[in-house]
Length: 241
Image (cartoon, rainbow, N blue to C red; front, side, top):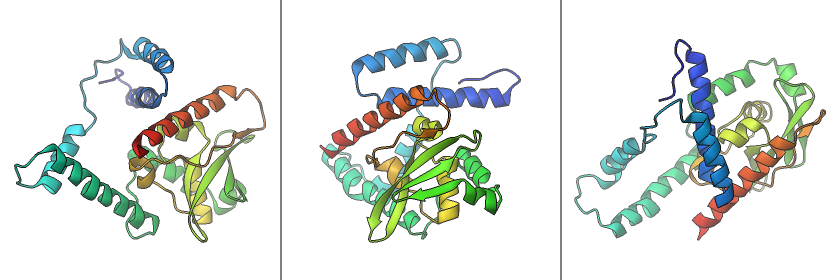
């Protein structure tokens, strides 16, 4: 519902900012923080749009009814819970396993495809010069600021097998979609990216290190990264219960 007259680019940018604001609201871990973010959200977007969308929930409900419930009229709560826990979750985990091992291609959003193109458009030499490996942490240079570096966290799932689970760049911390740096490391080092498993079965990644900036004045981004990680840890604990 957010639109800017005669400017498709600005419309997309504002819609992206609004989604990021909603992500922060959904994952905050305290009432005080929620109220603060909610006041900011209202003041920023109140005059820009009237929200009437349910973000494809109805579409997924239709998929659930068609694929998993079929023609059955038995919609008892216990049966729905059984289907979600024993069938739907299993399918998500199977998709994650197949993608991790290259059996099934990764589904990417439009923004993720754009980020992947930026990472793959670099020359081989430039791409390799941007990435440095240090144990289970990988340092990647910013695409826009030559003095800024971000750290990517890896998670081990086999004797010598790892997946990329997070990046300390603002893009990943705000949107939780695959960023340019993750695609670049995937390209250069052939390390798979934990995509569907991260989106549909969130886990607490290796505690993110402060990203390295050869300049200063990065405290705000560091605080934001820490706040988002606390939110995800809180959500993960609730799901484990």
